[in-house]
Length: 93
Image 1 (cartoon, one colour):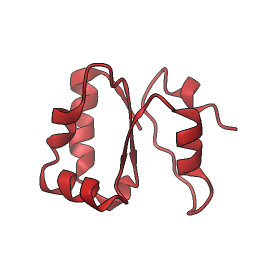
Image 2 (tube, rainbow, N blue to C red; image 1 turned 30 degrees about the horizontal axis):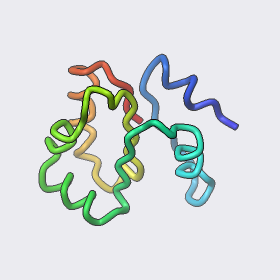
Image 3 (spheres, one colour; image 1 turned 180 degrees about the vertical axis):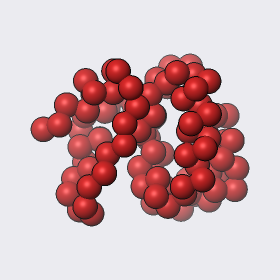
Image 4 (cartoon, rainbow, N blue to C red; image 1 turned 90 degrees about the vertical axis):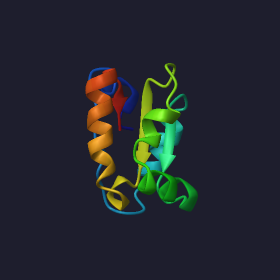
């Protein structure tokens, strides 16, 4: 199994792969303490698409590891992620 938790201690990463290969399952199995935004969830998608700044508003200081699943559905959200990485020096995935 890919040691995602160890990789993320050093820097941010993207996990790419074909559909239905277990990327989301790997995230939930390995990164239990992370905050996950699943953009397949309609409410999450609509909230972040209407107000990308909501991402920063919702994060707490304890949220050191943030996962955005299905980011390809909302590519403009990457601008917000980049800003937060620079601002907080957090790890985003």
